[in-house]
Structures are given as C-alpha cells and as structure tokens.
Image 1 (cartoon, rainbow, N blue to C red):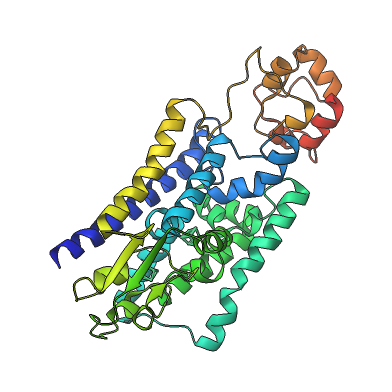
Image 2: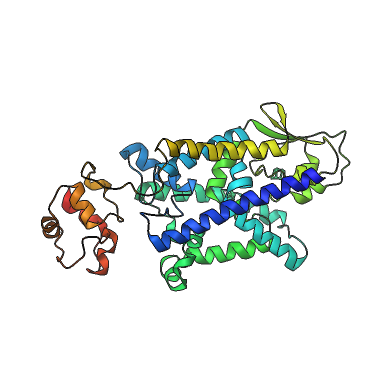
Length: 371
Ligand code: SF4
Ligand code: SF4
C-alpha cells in the first residue's frame, strides 16, 4: 500500500513537471519569440507527424517543426512499441492537464461520470477520423493545417492574451474550454475521444511488447481496477489487457488490494510498476539528452550564418530580412528592391511580420521572388 502511494505520487510529480515545463516554454515563446524558445508545436510529437510528408518528399520540416520534434515522435513511437501508450499515461502534458482537471472535478462533484456506452463506443472512433483528416490536410497543404482548431496550440497561446486568442484560435480555444469542462466530468476526455496522436499510439500499442495480465484465481472481484481505470477498461473482467485505449498509467495496479493479481509483462517478463515508470522516463529523457549532446536535437530554428545554404522553398516566416540577405548572399538594398518593399522596414523584421507594414504581404511572395 505504501509502495502504491509512492508510485501514484511519482506519476503525478512526473506529469506535473512535464506540464509545467511545456507551459513555461510556451509562455517564453510568446515573450522571447521562436528563436529563443520553442513553440508548443515544436514540442509536440504530432507536429512531426504533420511534417512527415514534407520531410520524406522534400527533405524539409514544415513551419515551426524541427529535428527535435522528429526525435520526440521517434522516441514516443519506440515507447508505444515497447511500453504501450506510456507517453499518454506518464508524460503527455495535455493528458496531465486533463487529469488535474479531473481531480478538481472529483472535488466539485464528489464523483466521476461515465459516458453512456451507446455514446461512448462510437465517440471512441472519432480520434481515428481526426487522425486521418488532419494528416491528409496537413500533408496536402504542407503546413500545420489543424493549428486554428488545435486546443493544445490554443493552450500554448493563453499567455498572449484573450484578444489574440480570439483572433488566432477562436475555434481551438472553444474546443479547449469544452475539453476542460469535459475533463471536470469525465476522465481523459480528449485522450479517449479526440486525440489524433493518441489514436496512432493506440494502433501501435496493439503490437506492443507490454501487456497487463490478471490472475483470475487470485482476483477477489472487488472491481477497484475497473473503477480506477481512466479510460474505462473493464480490467476486472479480462485476463489480458490488450486494448488500444490502455495508456499504461498503472492506476489499475495501484488500486488492486490483492498481491500479484495484476502483473505488467514486457516481452513476457514481469516488470514492477515503479520499474516500468523508470524505464519509460529513462528512454524518453535519455533519448532527448543523447541527441541534444550530439547536436541533433533542435526545437528552435538554427542560426543563419554566411555558410548557411537554403533554397527559396526553405524560407520560413520567422527568418528576418537580414537573415535572408545573408543566406542568399544578396545586399540588403537589392533584397528590398527584389521584394518591392520600402527601405523603411527594419532589417530585423521577420518575414511573417512584413504584413504589418504592407497589408496582405505573404511569406510565399518572398519565396516566389527569390526562386
Ligand atoms: S491521448 Fe493525446 S492528449 Fe491524451 S495523453 Fe495521449 S497524446 Fe496526450
Ligand atoms: S488498464 Fe490499467 S494501465 Fe491501462 S489505462 Fe486502465 S488503469 Fe491504466
């Protein structure tokens, strides 16, 4: 029991750390800009999935996505293969946000609600539809198509103020509010019904090396495991949990009052819940640290120097006029002439902000004029 409390606390502490880290980074991104602090997209594995088509066929990342985002996706896919959806259960900051709203909801309503089965079952397929639709449009538009509708992107921009949220994320912000209200009532509301990357991890976890097993003979049928499962898996009626919904949160094991009834098995070997958590976190953070030390992990744009070579198609909105002049080896006055913009625009203006001086000016115009 004492050990179970420890595991529960470790899990909450980890989720809190990841949520605080991403929230602070998102705030710094608003204050310091994308050069100094990563955007919430760059820190989300789904961003790389949206960029995959561009990476495979053009060799470039789409806007706001960098090598570090690719590494995050790869690490979470490895986790899904080995430890099921453990990214969801132990790391994901949006999952953490929902859990903390769930704790608040439990305090407010003194219980958790369970969606009616007839509504719950078809709703669970919604996340797979969202995965296919958002990826299709991200790939054909070569951009973060889902951005205006993305509740997590809206969360990352809360610090930019309500009017900016209303302008940039009117739908995403409304969806975020709905998700938070939903999370007050239902466990993991977004994860169960809406999250596209969770859907992908779920598909992969079907082939995972990790499974939870239940020893029917030792089980006292108290049903506590099922009651504590945030994704409503009927653990107490199964002998093996192979559901794509399982987020490897360990809460069923922590709730079980009998010894050795529930067991986590990875590649056929029993793994203690605390060891399971330590292994997951070590793979995730270890992978980030190693790739960071070797210079592979980047979540902010690399600095442009005289040796930088980019093509017109690789021009991004965050690049300044001065950087374009350096990268393309064009004198600044010649660049202003080619772009047909007045010399009064400061050279440190990011391309995406030229529209503040010339309404309607698009970054695409720069690409076209420099091709
Ligand atoms: S389902 Fe999505 S939001 Fe939920 S924990 Fe997994 S990745 Fe995060
Ligand atoms: S079955 Fe257990 S580990 Fe899986 S989601 Fe439910 S409580 Fe978490």
